[in-house]
Image (cartoon, rainbow, N blue to C red; front, side, top):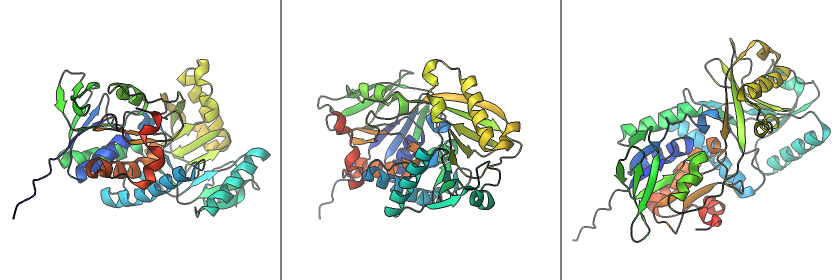
Length: 374
């Protein structure tokens, strides 16, 4: 009886080792691929480390297929925590949101009704109930409605990236950290053949995964592809506390607050992001974030800002993920999206299966790179 020839092991270069690249690479390694992680910096220290890191689908209602993908990834986090251990990176417990003007409050409650209709767990509490049950340090009025989503969470992105990359390397993956991709070579058939790094080395590969976050458009250009991205920078501050006074991530009026482990708290605000293009320095943005946070959590008044960073969010121009193959360049795939923290487990699993098995999951149908052209 004739034996079938053994299928050749794919060698995959994962360009960009934030949360998405780490998840794709770890899943590829588990499925038997030879993975090389490539990043100009250190894994998880870019946008992943300067994200609000909120795992949710409640903020993703603009398109049902996008909501469903986020819900699936929330479930995938439960599986991931069981597979790699939840310590130091996984913080379930829920999320809080409230507003302070009638129009915003009405919109929030309408969204809560929509979520309930989509079988998403939502509770509407009063400020007094929230202080009694969940967050006693909040300065929220007693009768203000607060939306609580108990299945949401936050993730320490840098710790999770370290865990996934470490496990992949233990299983045989390689890494090239501190080196950027200078070129992606293709053969006469247009298929990916190799990558050239900034240190002059050349790696023979069968597949390139572009998970380069804010640099994804540049990496796409190396295979003569246009990936249109938004310019949408965000400012995030970390403050140090003798004792962290909050337990859950929350969206209060004009400020977002979450614990960050290790005696620190993370702050972000869309309103303060709007000041970035006016030339405000990061230190001033951090001061404004801290000032807003103190109004919501007075105990943060004694804390100090340790660092403020401005990063551009990796958002394709239409606001939705670009995940999958680009047919005009065989062997080239993209994993580029905002909300990478939420979507990483699902995108990592689905894209790895597509790369090695050739079949695309229906859940990604609306998010293929081909919608931006060749």
